[in-house]
Image (cartoon, rainbow, N blue to C red; front, side):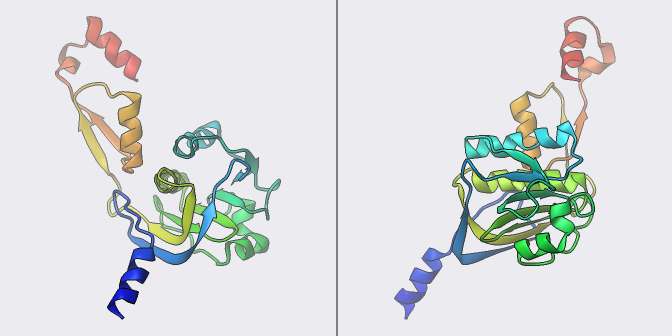
Amino acid sequence: MMFFTAILLAAAPVIELYPAPQKMDIERRGVFTVTRVTPVVLADATSDAEVSALDVLFEALGFELSVYGAREKQNAPGIYIGEPGRHAGLTSRQGAFMAKTTLPTPPPGGYRLTVKKDRITVLGGDPAGTFQGVQTLAALAAPSRDLPFLDIADHPDFAWRGVCLNKPPTKEHLNQLAAQHCNLVVFDSLDFYALAGDAAKVWRHTF
């Protein structure tokens, strides 16, 4: 019996996320495999910045996915990302059926991420929450494109998760902060007391 129990425990997927979400339930069986033909379905009215936020996911996968509006791929298997009310695929009866559940709207800054047989859903309480959900999806996809069936609910305990920097950050550094769900960067440098010459050029380029 102990040996059988050990086999079951070994078979359970192990996922480590940092920072840890408020809630994460992982099923022992079933995966959604992301392939090059898996569509990403966003709201029809999506800004360039929201589309650019997918770059971190594509980098984790190692390839780009085709992006569609909700009305183009409303009921097709794929990755559905957005907020209810803006995204037809997340608010219609068909969308709820495809997701196999009716997900409650997360609080501001929060998100719900589910992986089911036919669909991955990132449901944000607002655009900031959706952005954080995409960061988590990228973290899940980085080690493997086979994502286990799961349900993640997360929201910030505090309004701000920040960091203070005393020198200009690199793009890689900012991406690392975003991956850790940092939403506030404060700059404090001695350069600011005499911002001129080369120092002024460096900071001007940063902003």
